Length: 202
Image (tube, rainbow, N blue to C red; front, top):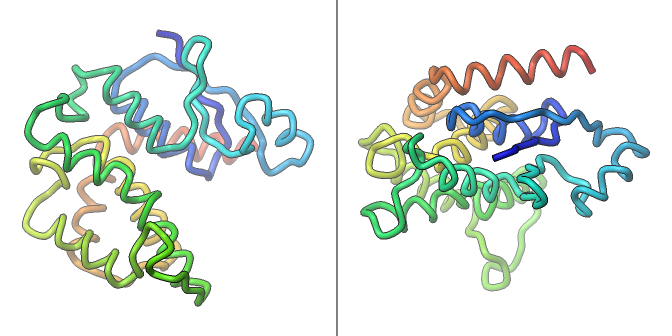
């Protein structure tokens, strides 16, 4: 399977790169500078939203970070990054896989900017409810699904790591211990090193 990841450093691309490293798949990185107006418009042929990451799989393109992680987890089952369809934990896995982009990010944005959306009109809860939900999901276990590392931990871990780095989440020992576990993973460290190298070369 030919995989090409359209890559811009210090973006959500690092999450997709981490996932690729977890699978052990062979892939190519295609550099794209979405911070440059001309480059971003040219990239629109790959993703009309002009957002990264995007993963080219043969003649198809997968966008949205969580969707990329979901695709890769199912495409490389031997990596053990997702419960199989019908297996215990599959439903919980899907829930957490998309919780970062569907709930954590929008709720955090509102919290940080002081904005509020009508609770009955949006698909996420308020920031306090989001934090309490994630805390309950991690309290007493190392990982979110079946107490086993999965692609859900890639998407949630990357989000929590970013928000913690920029002090957008309140300090919490449960979240801190979780980050320490996932950041010690060799695949995470390899992806981080590649991203740092790309950022330095930009």
